[in-house]
Length: 109
Image: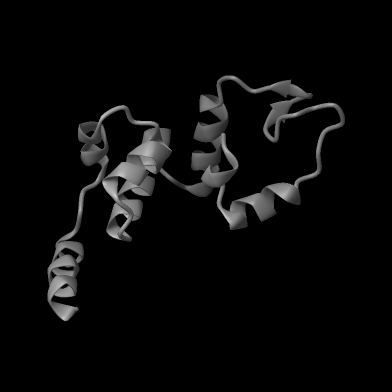
C-alpha cells in the first residue's frame, strides 16, 4: 500500500497502536500475518450488531462516497485497483442530489 492510500486520520490511529515486537503487521496473531480474516470480521459485525454486512459492502460504500464527493471515476478506480473504468462504474451509484448539484454547478460559474 502506498503512503497516498492511507488517510491522515487513519495514519494517526494506526501510529497509536502498540506494536508487537518483531512483527511488521498491525493485525496479527501472535506476531504472524493474518491471511484470512473472515472469522474476525464476522465476530466484529456480530459484536457491533451488524447483520448481513460483507467486506465487499465496505468497498462499495467507499467507492460510492468518493464519487458522490466529486472524486473522478479514474482516481476512484486507481484507489480500488480496477483495470477498467467499467468496473468502477459498478460501484459509483450516484444519488439524484449529486447529479442535480453537478448540473447546478455548471451554471453557477
